[in-house]
Structure formats: C-alpha cells, structure tokens
Length: 50
Image (tube, rainbow, N blue to C red; front, side):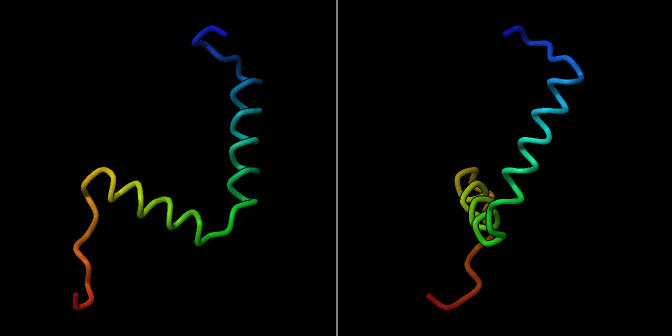
C-alpha cells in the first residue's frame, strides 16, 4: 500500500482505533501511558517512601 490513504481509509482506521480503545479498560490505558513515559525516561519520581 502506498503512503497516501484515501479519506475513506483514514476514517476506517480512525474508527477501528476508537473501537479498540473503547474495548480496553481505563486502567490498562493508564498503565500503558505510565510504561511509555518510563520507557522515554520522563516518568515522575516515586511519591511514596522507598
């Protein structure tokens, strides 16, 4: 497939990503965000005692 998508293809991809996101529990999405931040080295320091 070429690098250019038609508007219909972009809409279909957006709908599929939205449907997939809505099926996942919120805690899983938050955990993924946290892990992505840690992987990038931008994670905030732990707030609790060691």
